[in-house]
Amino acid sequence: MDPNDKKTRDTRFAEFLEKRESVLKWIKTYSPYELVSKDDPPVYLIYSGVPAIGQEQKDPTHTANYGVKLQEHCQAIGSECELVYPNAPNVKHKTIAEFLIATLKK
Image 1 (cartoon, rainbow, N blue to C red):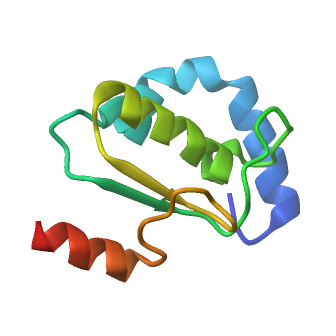
Image 2: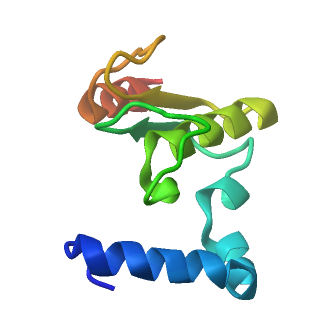
């Protein structure tokens, strides 16, 4: 799958979704959602687009929607997670550099 070829990418992603059950064990093995734990360092997520929860997405795993859900999961398990996207509320650090400097100074 060529991520730069949107036509191929989108059809291949649809194929992936159809066969999701057959790769679910790999998703659970490599998914940040599955792997994050309370004792992990803080997570910083930055997206160029805004969340559109409940709306169809061509690539849901790589949208701000995923970031929202990952942040909710992190908060539920007690792991620090900062989510940044255009006009996001409660942004402490506008850039990854600011986040890293502040985090490493703790």
